Length: 77
Image 1 (cartoon, rainbow, N blue to C red):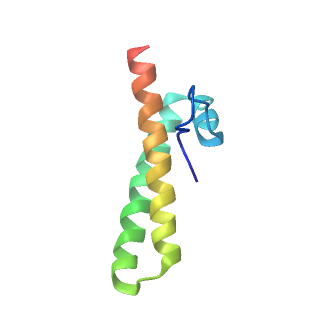
Image 2 (image 1 turned 120 degrees about the vertical axis):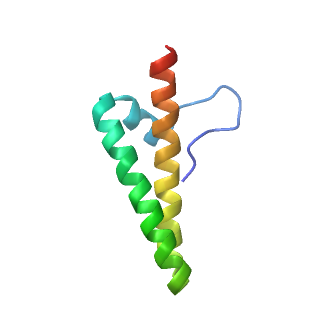
């Protein structure tokens, strides 16, 4: 899953569009959940080396990045 386009003017991805529509308090809860998911899946992946767990951690990290970028935009905008 790509979050940011590198070609020409930046176009919003589905994740970015979704994040932009969510209220700040809900985004903070989503960010906290993403942190939990990332940590849990990385911990289990370290023990089991299951690719699915690493993929889930990666997806959580992408969501967290999109959320923090949106929060920064709202804070500075």
